[in-house]
Length: 537
Image 1: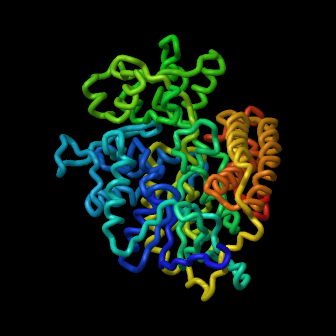
Image 2: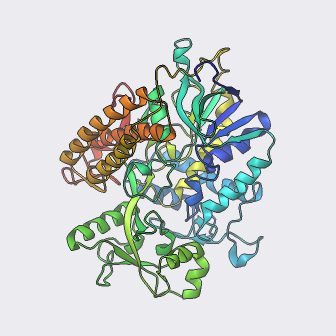
Image 3: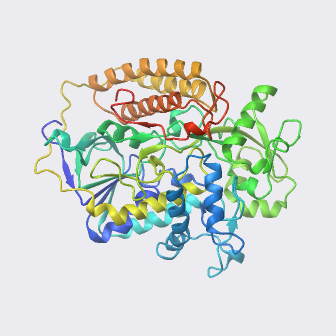
């Protein structure tokens, strides 16, 4: 392996195959070869599981300014207003581009393909502005963009490739910059190098750092970890959004129950049938996610119940099935008919509002390295994400990166060092990996969850420090596997989340601590970490 590392060249190297990565690839592909790496199948992205839609202003009774103000309000004083304005203004045009250029079949009024978009409403929105495809919007976007990518002769997708680390110019000539990656080809069981002037992180989120999450298995924070290790700044990782309504059932414990159900009139109820949010927020069950998740968490702790219930039974049953066919089918598969039965739900880790620090064009502070989508921290979300602004950010950053990328990197060096595995050998202690996985996720859920305290954060920090020592020893001792690489990344991201949380001495948005229950204006700043100020990489 050491002497025969395959080296692949491209003009653009994209890590991830969700909306952000695919859109960027399609927008630049006419300029030169694009290589997309994905560690599982191409369709296995967070995008595929997005149910709600993309928020953008299309209604005559809505306005860009109202969308901006809703985003700022939910972001709890930490949004970058310039970024919010930029994203909201570009939203309608980019949604149209997805539909008209790439064939995304968003729902239209009356089912007429020439009619205006049908608009939904979700938590925190004052108007209907969520463009969707039934309750499987992400699946439809993934379908359309993947079909376009497969059809483009300049785009090559390599499945089952897990990035180990970014290739750094500092090891070539001492300068700062990125020119590609080392990646494990799991199918061939070998490490390969991919080099390019531009490397784009589109790796999604980190929900799998928590025991209970709506995220698919691929969401292990890889982009944040590898960017941090090369020296990029990361920020606001304490703001992990817990979705209030994950289906509570032993056979479907990662299935998301979309916020759009509450947008269409669903009501959150206690076990006794009373309205959970009636006296808790002016928007009731459509309050922002951080508020609803905390109220559910408090209710479960107070009552000792295992879940609360989302009630759709008062709505027209035919409409419920037509609007939410996938959710209805999944619930029916476990014996819940949401036309007649309230849906048992609990909060679960969902969306990372922080990430790798970028500008509006997805540029990091490391030349040649860009970040787009959930992995990025652009300033759009602040301390809490407005529902369906995630896909908006993904396409806005991807579009901006496609415009700016050619002036950001430089050609790779003439020679690339082969992967050197040293004295590493095949593992005979795989049980350590699975045990450490469980320990990391349990520690994060128990000590860095919806409600936090200084004592809990310190306990979490100490536990992850010990676990990470074991993981790093294992990493250097044995040959790399996907499990080990993901574990290495997720444990680092866990430590970064804890360190960001320890630095924020207030409760703001998604970060709620019993030691500092109030919001302080003098704390309205981003918590920024890099290798000089944060945990050991």
